[in-house]
Image (cartoon, rainbow, N blue to C red; front, side, top):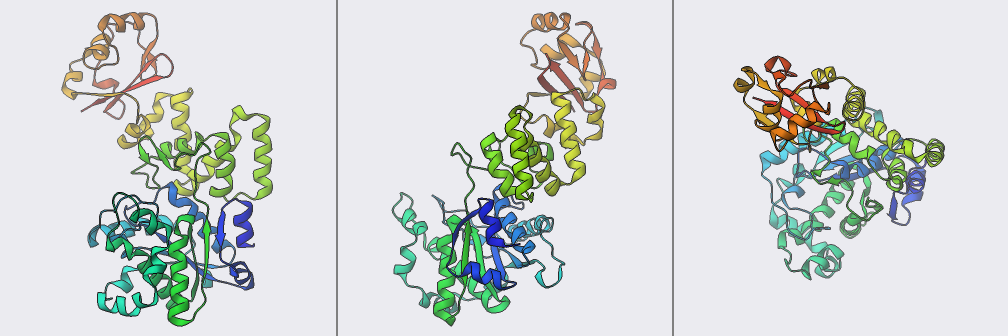
Length: 427
């Protein structure tokens, strides 16, 4: 497998330094990508770089995942309009542990000579004094060189300016590359296209400090076809951690992509080969309403991130909300998963003791909760057969509900019509 060609046909390649492809075709190369430790989970925005590392390792090369324990304390100004908050050592360590456990799902850390390896730049920066840094690193890169970078120019010309902390970031990242080159024979740094300036600072430091050779490769930044930012919804980031983004919501994120985006994403975020992807595209184009691409994309990524069991649960969740799956399915879910399933839909909380006494359907839906604006409206729709609790139609407005009706001893699921769901949480 040719690593660069693989990135090209998938539409992932952006910039590549001359000589890099020849180097990669000669034999095993060690290369690295840095990951930002400002949270204890990666999100789907990190998946493009994870996929780059997967292809790199599959091509026989050795990937290093650098988690920026030191650079996380500084903050990369690339693409940012304001300086980030600095993180404490304890928070950083917690975040690094979370990121490592996620990367282990994608990369092989036990495959012999090209095993993936995790490194933390705090390990080599923690004993590095400021005086030593400016003497051993700073003297090799001129201010003119640093000022010429777009990430610096854009911030200096903006309203907020740029702190000295952020200005030195490219030197810190450049030294990461130098350290890995010197100590791990790591000759290639990869990253998103917004990292080109920082990566090249590293290759320049290696050349000026030790007359060494190092290389750079960047991938396309992922955007939606409509130009909006990839990986975010109204609720914020789509995380790889199931506690932050439920597998159901994660699955729905991919399932709801547009046709144009699905054709892009299925190349970038899956390991399907070109022939299979083209066959899926042909099948999709013949019947777009079946959403063949979106289903294949969502299935593949959900299984790789969360596993087969969680994928099956996500499918059942979809069928529950949009199909004919019975209420019994909710008994298979934890309380957090039930709440996650109804995230974004109206929910109401009532007291356990109130329901224990028994409440008629009209009062439950129009007085205790706001499913209906008035008792009259509730009665009318119940009498018309248009309201269900726990997927069973309410027979009369006077039907009594008590704690025996609860799912997981905590929930009532109300349907108004076929598709309007409400969750009642009883505490």
